[in-house]
Length: 489
Image (cartoon, rainbow, N blue to C red; front, top):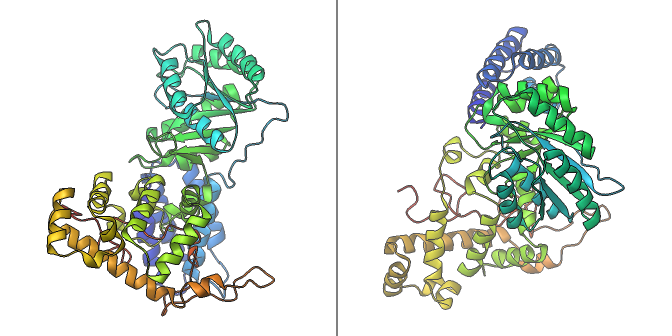
């Protein structure tokens, strides 16, 4: 969504870094470009004026820092003010001392209320909660059936009945108490536009269940209209936050940067895809990082931690650093990475990735091609790819439906990756096992490569607990990582 804005900021700051000391005219020029970039991104003009004003106040006459040059200080200021505009702090959900914690979702028709009700339920279920969904949208045909279908996918029950929305919501609260459900999520009806009937109904539902949190579901693709919708709903419901949907779309992102300052309520959650697990807490500082091209390593690490067991990662790291990493291990790593989401999203979270690589579309069928090649090998071939001769290569290619050259390319690059990682391992497993910790908890002894930085069982020192490899990158990606056979065809 923020590609265009990120590109503009990248251009602005690239030129800025080439200068030494910044004069007042230099700062004015940067601020003019920032203002235009924000307006083109469909950010509300009052928000742009406020944001640029705060940046100007801090940037003009900024004192020289020993750690940062003037250009870096301006970038730091812009990052901090962007974070503030996006909400500052991440919203923390406090659960009711007497369950259930009641959450009411409101919004216009088509904003994604029903889908995001299920996504929110899945989010709480991952945290060990026992949610109940209430289908109080009796206006839209099949809305309740849609909610039941989604609830079945995540194994969360749905309560609804053929009466009126207010009664359904009230009875749903009684059902949650009777069944010991500690989170109640109420999906309400929407309209194509704001009207008196919609507002009266959602107000009555709110009065009936007395929600602890009221979230407005807003389609980020609607731009500044989303801010107007939020203002109108907030006047009726006193919102606690916003759930921003379609944050993975190709809109310009103005809603995300405008809603907090205009409505005064934070973005609580962000929906980043069509799958039910494409849903996460909204972190203003992380989105500011991504807008300014700094990546989003914290989210990437959290996704890795969700699918990687600590012992599993330790064992894989030891094998890799010893040079014993097999194609079976590589296949397992690739399957774990797929659980984290699409490779395009993961690449977008990495700092310093070239724009050309971020824009490359990597599809699941390309990963399936690599899996097919490895599955067509015998256990002995996967354990020791050196045994693969011309005859075996032809058989593997035929079994996986690829050219023999694709098999050769995968094996060659896998062997190169394994060789490089063994070199990076330096001292090998004995050193990994004998690492001692000082009183402060820091490792006194770390294996080192030749100028490549520390490498631990958790991955590179500055990127802890990361997957060991990201398959599917082409030649512009990190050296030694295998590309997909036939990539770019």
